[in-house]
Image (cartoon, rainbow, N blue to C red; front, side):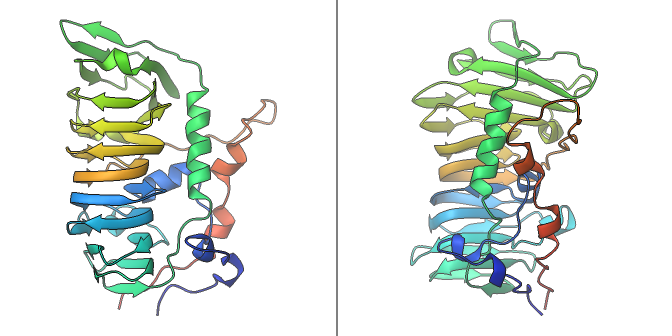
Length: 302
């Protein structure tokens, strides 16, 4: 039996309005999906080790989703591929008996279970944008250190919680990056600028640390990731081009894909609000949906 359509109460207008169901908080979105966009994805080469939530079309060369058997690592009630606009240029395979929901008519879409319309988490873009805005508003608690001729070290000590760095695009020019948690639960690196952000830095730290790192980009119109990035990348509304693998989740406006996204599940829980302390206006969005989420059942595998 397939995913139950207790969707009737959640049905509105296309492309995802007609099939939005349940709300995920921002952390859950980053944990459950490896690629999230509000717009189109153009494929030169793309393998998503995880789930893909694509707001626009998926066109170009053949794409693969769920190469890492995401269901065995992170549970979700959503399909491995959620595609807002399948077209005659759509060529994609969902591996490991995965499922796909989509709008439109793909030329080649292979999955164990396929269905229309596309079923997406409700208001996912607004929730992620609010999360990014909250992270960007946090005060810096540490400073990166320039090391040697071209090194940049994120190595502040912490007693837990979130370590926050504020950077500009110019700070990364021709610099290789080292990073250590040193007691932090999460490292947030807010990077601001305008125009195009070209990332040419080598990320010289273990990929497993990506589970505790968020690169929060703001102000850029486009981003070129020309090295293998380690950490979750928040680039809402931006045109992102990546030609090297990303260790973690990418959230973007549109994407030109030329490599792979690997599962590095964000290891962080939004702490509960303390009644005596004012909470950010967007915190209810981040924590919403736990009850509604239970309404949507997972498709059983045939």
